[in-house]
Image 1 (tube, rainbow, N blue to C red):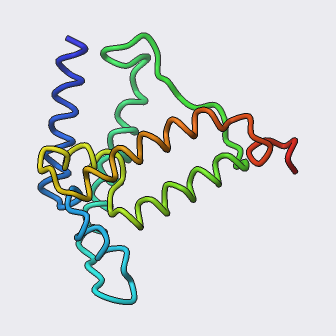
Image 2: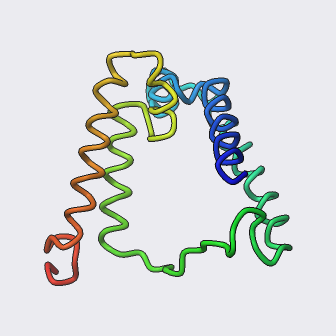
Image 3: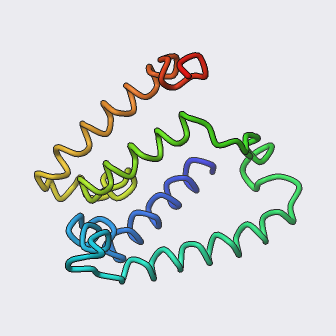
Length: 144
């Protein structure tokens, strides 16, 4: 049942990304181009997502545990540290260059667009590098 619900959730998410235009890198890049051909339509998509998440969180916190799990997996760290800032910057730069973030990139893969075929392998390389770079001096307090 858990796998079926995970598949259904992913399917709804992917369809939503395609319908909203988030799987189209040109639309995303136009949204990010404030000084040029700015397309504000994705702001409404993001606003709708924030509203849905806000309502969903308010409803789900009424339960002792999730429907398909033993406990809620809630991050405990609230600090803003060097790895968080560097990771956010790398994510933002990648999003701005490629016009994709991870979910829409996977959703656009079946279209076999050249940009997707370059972005996804580079994203996977970046994830691998990031997982192995946790002990680099630039990411730890030892490097400060």
